[in-house]
Length: 93
Image 1: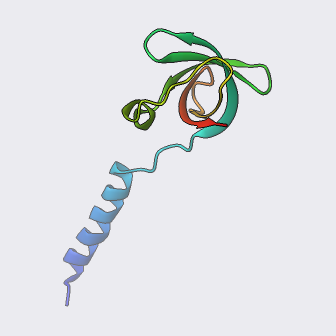
Image 2: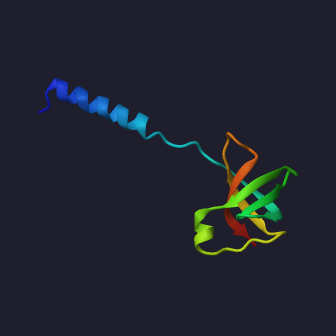
Image 3: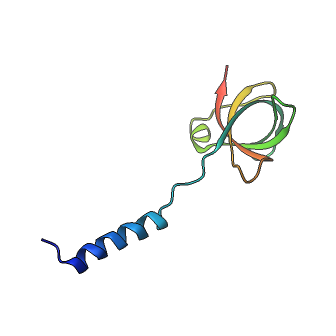
């Protein structure tokens, strides 16, 4: 059905597609307690191992007007490249 040249082109374009749309790095999921509230929806969060990170609220929480105060337990995502910043994804009870 396909000539050899067209089959090779299909394989080549599939490889280029995978290279262009690589899967992103996996985030590190951690839990912590909000230590202080900063301006611009930024928070200082203390992790269970006493490490402090600068965290911001994710878009879904902003959209739904989720309020966070000092002492709230939160779930966060951290990039493996910068362990001093995080994104708050969930407020725990």
